[in-house]
Image (cartoon, rainbow, N blue to C red; front, side, top):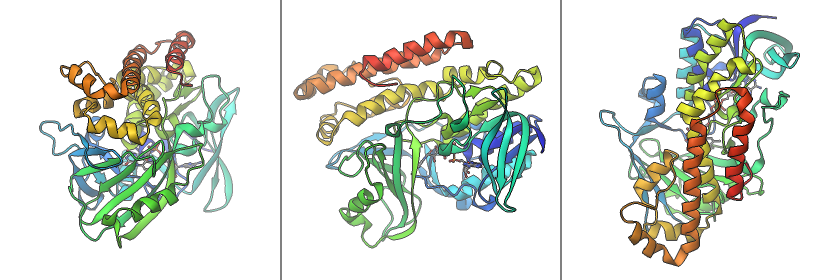
Length: 454
Ligand SMILES: Cc1cc2nc3c(=O)[nH]c(=O)nc-3n(C[C@H](O)[C@H](O)[C@H](O)COP(=O)(O)OP(=O)(O)OC[C@H]3O[C@@H](n4cnc5c(N)ncnc54)[C@H](O)[C@@H]3O)c2cc1C
């Protein structure tokens, strides 16, 4: 039995960064990770990270063997691949928009920061369940897989940063906490790191291909990782029984640039692609990263938002411990801060756009891109969670170009308006737990107005 201020379960981007920040603030932190420490970061992933996330969290930019390649834009293609829309948002004074990285080296760097800050790291520690006292989390039970023994650790606050497995969230019985994530709210993926015959061009762009022959309810990605190396994969909507690996192999077979490509690494994985959890806190516990559904529902990127969630949560944990109130009420400030001022509002708004995109078939997507119904500016605004504004100066032109698909135009407009409303609702996330049920009803109503289940 050990006593700590804070136990963090999972040393992925969310947990490692949170542990590092908490230790810097003077908390006594225990970081538990089921893998061996030299494998931390080894996760099936697209390995793309936007610069602003690292900047916001004060993490130095990737370099050396960790750096894949700098990225300056994302090209989004319809199935025919005849046209594309670029999303590019360069910030003055910054070297690029983001990077691809070697995920293992990146993970090792974050873990190193946690250790350097003073967090105690225990690997081979597979957390099995929370220790509870009257429903409040007071620590965890875990299996030390190197000695095959059961152990317990106690702390004032516990963080579930165990990613998609949500090892603790699944076992918490609290009216605020959703224990499971519906299959249709998950992206089920397969990806390979490939060595191509020639470098992928353009070398500073990520490609996204919306083609439901290969990626129904998701997309295909090609992310250059420097030289001839590329990270290639696809995601499908869960719950339909799609077979991502088979679809991926079909995609590769139909695209000559992948001829004779050497597979460096292959594997499958899943990510939550829905609104964030109703609450990221319960009594004695906080959920960050994939465990808190802190993932961008449109592109499934969650490394940056996981780091930001850990960053934002840390001062609230410290304050709650100092105030001697580590109940859900005592930790509630994290919900307010993340939803009102950080990524929560954006995830919630983009979840509506994700639902819309999942309704749109190949033909409609082709139509939208080819007829410039949606432009780069729209996508930038949409990515900020603000909805696709069809009321720009060229509205009339777009309207004429879109006449053949009036129903689709109207649907886009309706979802766009709801996205803006969702943003506003999250910007006024209730300060107190008592006001939460009424706020939740308003959010649910917004989903229902569009015919979606929240
Ligand atoms: C195929 C695929 C491609 C992706 N591509 C991208 C991308 O290009 N860019 C991007 O930003 N995001 C991407 N994501 C999403 C991204 O990987 C996650 O959102 C991000 O890793 C979340 O970080 P996390 O710290 O919450 O969880 P994780 O990175 O999953 O880390 C969780 C950690 O907890 C440990 N753990 C789990 N259970 C236990 C337990 N019971 N006891 C102890 N330890 C435990 C795990 O071993 C792991 O180290 C992708 C996801 C998938 C599946």
